[in-house]
Length: 193
Image 1: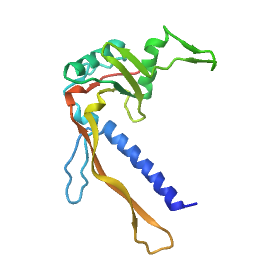
Image 2: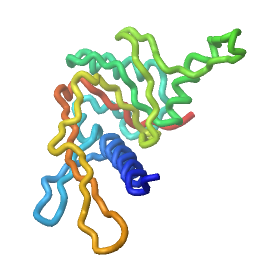
Image 3: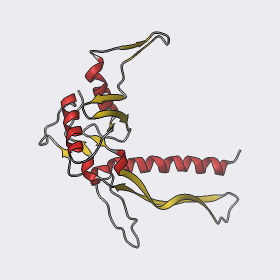
Image 4: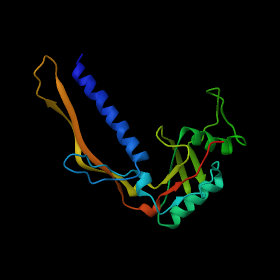
């Protein structure tokens, strides 16, 4: 097998995780300098208009909080159809309705209690868990106004070596492009049940 190719694929997967982490958690951007790399702001740094806090008082997610966030983003021109949540908030959202309704797939002999899509007054909303999301926030997103802007597409490059092995690196640059900031929302000041 090709050890160099295997390690390059492994490194690309790590780059993808790093990008998801930056998009999910990075609050500021920096232009950089000759000696410091520039950084991009992620969703928490770009979405500021509809940052729906509770005056610093933590609260458990409810249908009313979700509906209000959808309403605010919709009123500002968005059509939000994705909630990006932590694992804990995914469980909390599933618990909002599963105590009342249990779906049983008899052919597969299983009970489904997880919520992946919510039908709301503002349309269908997909609930997506991210391992990098904090339990204190939920992103309410309209993906049509979000994009990855590639400044330099990622590519692998072989390096000169003076030993028996191969060496390489991955280079590239991207940023988060927010085309409709007001059509997004962040629910803040959350806690787990």
